[in-house]
Image 1 (cartoon, helix red, strand yellow):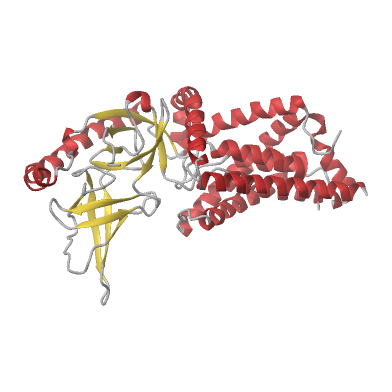
Image 2 (tube, helix red, strand yellow):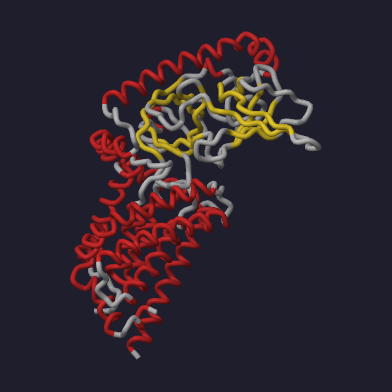
Length: 185
Length: 278
């Protein structure tokens, strides 16, 4: 199998997973507003896909998750997917460097850091294309809530991604571990 | 060798995905493609709307709990409904206070639309914004109910926002506090015209164009101006002047306006079936 490839069954499962994430986000998480912000299930999915599926497949799933997320916002189409791709790819590289089989604590911490990074990256990218800025305290609140949400959701989403991508999900990660992380650098 | 090929493949994938994202952003910003994206977005919202409503109703207590609303469920719903009714009455009273004067001084002379004559569509707020970077919410009425893009939305005692996009059964409303929101207002019933702009979060609106010779008073009511080419009809109460600052040497005054409507606790809203002038 080509490294990073997703099988037909994997694509079908990804569609199911993305649909379920969309429903979870718009019907549940959008209503859980803490400090003016709410958790982001799409981002948690993107980071989990990087951690479980590796940099390449993670970036691909993150791109799709970002496109679906962009359906429900008013900011320019593609902005979310751009940020998700970069964060998921980095998470995949980090997962490879950790030795292939990262402990739960590593995934949770990486997800939290990824949540903060994605929020800041999104804010910066939005600002660059002329979207209005958030006040600093609001941005901090968003980053905090999103990071906490990602930390909570990354493990269930890791399991869901493993199911969606099947047995080959960890292939890229194992190869990375075998080469001492060089494969994802 | 295999590792090098793999690295190249990864980087190529990353590059393609980044370029695809940037292309999508560019297409959405420029050209006719933005209409296509809007259509896809409205379609996606319409498809998800039934499931969304069902789950929102069923799971709203969970969200309310996490949001700190202890008395969730029926009490919240009933409270929102009563608040909406009370607010509508207060808005009516505020509108009545200036109606005669406006009719005589503005409408008859300038043929401006008046908010009391505009039919309304009552709508329920389904959910808030999916993005943490925008102040919008979704309502359960769309084009099939006569809701269209650009229509003003009111709740409580005043203006809430405008319809940003409308699908067949749902619509997205942009709050007046969103930094993208900007509209013409009048200080008092026949006061000076200024431009109100959102500042995000729960921050008050800021007024620009208030020159040093104007004399806005704290507590003064601010209405939509409805001047020629305005995006909103005249006479919708917006809020009250909260602070007025004058910096010595400056040509303008810094004025903040606190909205009448409780924008953080919206349950029901009314969409005014008024289209901005083309």
